[in-house]
Length: 158
Picture (cartoon, rainbow, N blue to C red):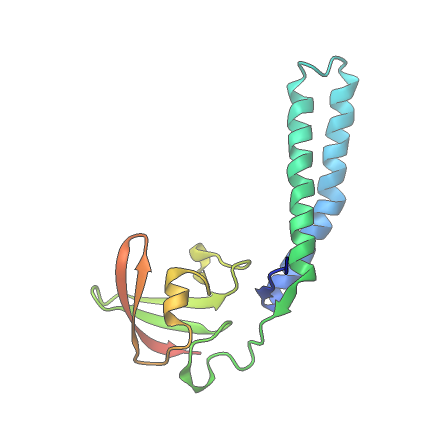
């Protein structure tokens, strides 16, 4: 089975690498220490601290594997040419106007790994991201979102 590429900005890759270092270092060490302390308490069959530490260890190790795969398959998004010629592409910032309400929103289109809607970073695979990719200034697009169909006019691409 072919592994899917992880499209990411250089900044996003750096964040993944930093998280991996944290998880392999201080976080892993803290969990091991918690396990040692829980074992020292004796009977492990009814030891909730031990159970929680084992669960945290499993989650941490799973995340490490996930991060290593994302880093291994990372393809850096070239943001230097993003938005040139007014065409929406990965890495560019877009100002959209909701056709119905007239409200304007600014989004940066990123790969799914970096998506953070609370910080206006939308995935290229999200309904809005999919609708605007490849479009240009003044195009009106319709995004099929969980909230229903939303229409946006692309005001600016940078």
